[in-house]
Image (tube, rainbow, N blue to C red; front, side, top):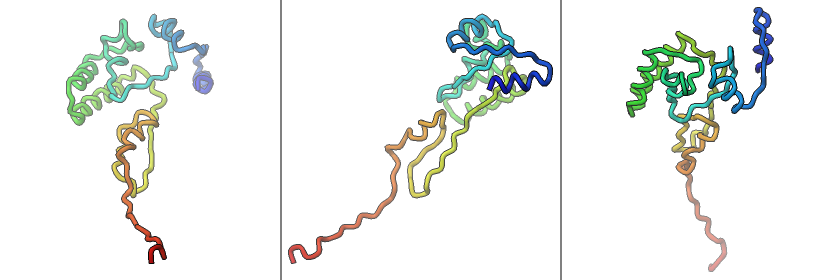
Length: 160
């Protein structure tokens, strides 16, 4: 991916000196000391989509807010979402955070996987949301069932 980005940026006059580094090296040598202009990094949030570790302003100095994004309204949306257990209300706060993030663009998000799975109508009790990884689709597989009909076939000729 970095080669494609470097080629595209070269077309508009941006010189790219790409370095492949290990994740520990990236973190200790570039991200933590903030000695980078651009970093291509893969992050995955846990099942709870809490962006606090990556985007709350308190995480700028010693946390993972490597972009140094400091926005009071975004902080408030994150804090309010973290304080509520009602999923619908939390979602509203996260949507507000996402709007602010999109407006200010402290980072360019290149990829977010969307997992889509088909299940036959005859399979019941399948719960597919939320999926944070492909393995999550089997989270409640022990509850799945198919309605069947039991047919007993007698032994013909036995005991007659």
